[in-house]
Image (cartoon, rainbow, N blue to C red; front, side, top):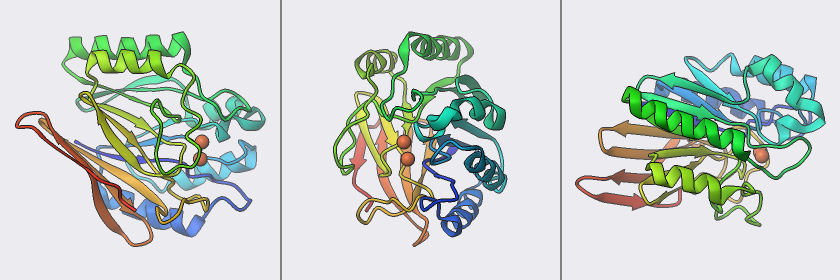
Length: 255
Ligand SMILES: [Fe+2]
Ligand SMILES: [Fe+2]
């Protein structure tokens, strides 16, 4: 199973969006032939109709199955009313092969902070229990993060109810959590769970030398590997490799 995890596209008529980089990135994503693509929010910068129009148009160039959750920027300026019109449900459970993905809107309108809340916690629990029944792998994806992300300046905007969320996820031994928001790629194993954050695909606001990137997540039996594809250099760097049995865990920065 191969997942292309992209994030923080930041479509806008303003300064944020780098269309040339996006077009190159879309080709690189398609070349991976992933089983599905997950977009972890901030498809727009201001949540305006003009931003959403660009985002919908540009995403057409990404082939195959795609699952999309909103970010804090998408919910600005009543953008949370537009998101369902353009990209469907903001909270959902969808199957992609063996994976049952709970996609959740972690943002609140006009705030940069995130919160999942009891309703979304229930969606995570539902995904976990139904996946167990149906022999599938439960996975969750949202925009904000539930652990601090290094190399991202002030380590803020962790969801307000991170403790509760982490508890549900870690107790179930969910293998993968997908996140975005901080514009740096990062992955770390906490207990048996890979916390995977994608950098920004096409926003000009990149941090230091991390550049514009997306993640490629490969799951093969007990082995999970996460690579970071740098859009400018077209080079992939293996950020994390974890095998439960026989045990192997390697983790590095890809800058
Ligand atoms: Fe962003
Ligand atoms: Fe964000």
